[in-house]
Image (cartoon, rainbow, N blue to C red; front, side, top):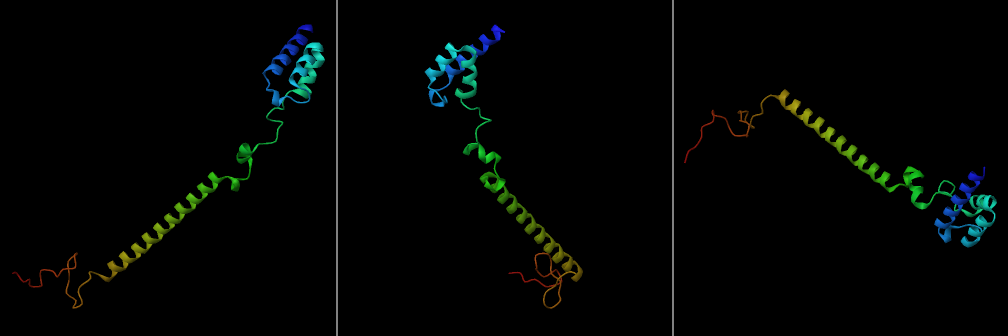
Length: 138
């Protein structure tokens, strides 16, 4: 039992020495050091209960941590990703619409047959008159 009390006292002393003075609660750092030495088990217990800085889990979330635990619409990265996804979706919809329009136009042209000129004479793919039309050579 005395060994456990000694271990707790030594651990409290080490923690007291390593803790920055600005984070020590209730008493000045030297007061806690004296209390732990003069009242070994009681001083160590009081240090852990009243003097030691609060652990991270006991504190309120700071501004830097709040972004990770806050609402998604408060996170600029999340909002940026949403905007990118919205733009990509709009581009895909526009692409699908244009492809459907192009397919409809192609099928209409196939149904109408091969297009000719205004006189009904056939033309090749480039829109030039076919071999039936005489050509002038210079």
